[in-house]
Image (cartoon, rainbow over all chains, first blue to last red; front, side, top):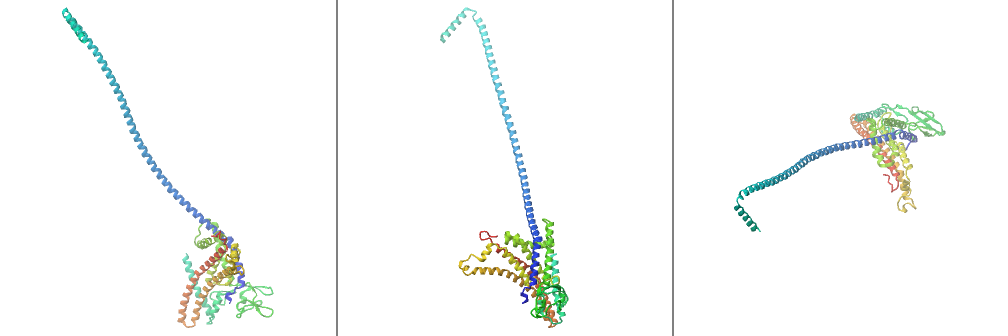
Length: 165
Length: 353
C-alpha cells in the first residue's frame, strides 16, 4: 500500500533538508539560546543570593546597632552607678578624715588641758604650801614669843617624833 | 494574546475544514469518491491544491532522471491532466497511478529516479524556513540582550525550549545534555512545526508531512544513527556480550540476537508511532468531513444533521490534533533522549546520572 511505502524522493529531500536544518540550528540558534538562558538563570540566582545576603546583613546591622545601643545604655548606667558610688565613697572618706582630724585636735586639746591643769595644780600647791609656810611662820613667831610655850612645843614635837619612831 | 491566537486558529480550522472539501465535491457533481479524496489528502501530490478549486493546483517543479541518465525539470502543471511532457506523464490508474512515469525502449512504463519537489517536499522547505526564521532571530535577540528576559513570542518559545532542555534532556542525559540538546531540540521543534502546519488546511500549510512514513523514517533513522554512532563501548558490550549465563550467548548467540533486534526495533517503533498518530488524526478528520457528502445523497434533513455533527466532531478532532501534535513531538523527543541515554552507559561503577 502506498501509504506505508516511503517514497525515495521524499526520503532524499527529508534527509538533506533535516541535516541542513540541524546544522544551521545547532550552529546558530540552540547554543546561543541555551547559553543565554543558563547565564540568565545563574545571574538571577546570584542576584537573589546577593539580595538575601544584603537583607541578612541589613538585619545584622540593625541587630548590631540595637546591641550597641543597649550596651551603651548599660555602660551609661554602670558609669552612673560607679559615679554615685565614688561620690559616696569620697564623702565617706572625707567624713572619716574629718573625724580623725577632729579627734586629733580634741586629743591634743585634752592633753593641753591636762597639762595646764597639772601645771596650775602644781602652781596652786606651791602657793598653798608657801602660804601655809608663811602662816606657820607667822604663827610660830607669835607662839614662840614666850619660853614656856616654846618648851611645851618642843616637848610635844619630840613626843610626836618618838611616837612615830 | 495567546487566547486570541487560539481563537483565530480555531476559527481558521473550522472555516477550512468546512470549505475545502465541499467545493471539491460540488465540482465532481455527485460522484464523490470518499476513499480517493481521503487518500489524495493523506498522500503526496505533485501540485498543491488551492482552496475553492479542485482542478487548479499550484505547480511545483518535477525533477526526474530516466534510465538513460537524462535529467528533466519541469512544472507539474505540464503533466497535470493526463498530458505528456518530454515523455513523462502521470497514469490515472494502474499500479503506478499518480506517479510520474516514462516509457522505456520497449514501451513499458517505469518510474524514473524521482527527486521532484512535491507538495510534501515543499512543505518540508517551508517548515524548515519557518524554523530558521523563528530561531535564528531569537538567538540573535538573546545575543543582543544578555541576561534579558524575552516577552511574548520568544518568551513562549523559551518556555518550550526550557521545558525540553531543563526538564527532559538535562535530567536524563546529565553531563551529556549540552552535547545532545541541539539535536533533540531540532527534532522536537521540527516535528512540532510540521505537525501544526499539517493541521492548517491551505497553502502554505496543510501537507500531511508527519503522517508520511518517509519523513518519520528519516527522523527515526537520524535518532538511530545518533544513538549508535555515539554509543559507548559498554553499550556495545551489552548488546554483543551481555552479562547473562554463558549458555545464553556462547554456542548460540541468543541474547545478542535479542539485544540487536531490540536496538533495531527502537527506531522502527519511533517511526511507526509518529506516523500512525499523525496519519490517524488526519484520517479521522477527513472521514468525518467525507461523511457529510456520503450522507448528503440521502436528502436535505440528513445532510444538515450530518453536517452539524461532522463539523462538530471534526472540530473536536482538530483541537485534539493540536494537542497530539505537541504530545507526539514531545514523545518522540523523550524516546530519543532515553535511547541516547541508554547508549551512553559508562558501566556499573560510573552511572551517567
